[in-house]
Image (cartoon, rainbow, N blue to C red):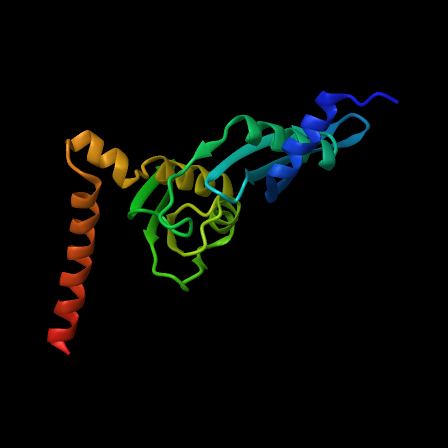
Length: 190
């Protein structure tokens, strides 16, 4: 029996990404015979190595809504640069509608300190240490979109150095000097 290579490619692609259901809404439409139910799903997809995406799907059945949302998320992947493959390079803020989020890089061992929808994004992204705070709207759709807005502003030192015409070591050493200055100030005050 001959194997279909496109089916194998689809299976490999599906196993490469993990997905997480963030929100599921049930909507009722009242019609002559009673109520018709529909479902809306918000799914976050990622490879846990720096790629993440989210999607929204609506259907009459839950599995179909989740499938549509997962496909939409795979089509809209975002690559996010990470420091040491565990945290963000720098602090950033994001906003969508009334949802505002603040993302902060964290030292090793901190873990993911973030609420529901933001936690799902960081888990699928592969970030292990981050501190995040949601300000404003608690709507999961707005929180996820605001988190993606903040992640779009993440830059790695190589890109910053190229834009400024400097060496990467100058950019990174400045970050270390600033961190050293703050720890010295804390030690002096104690």
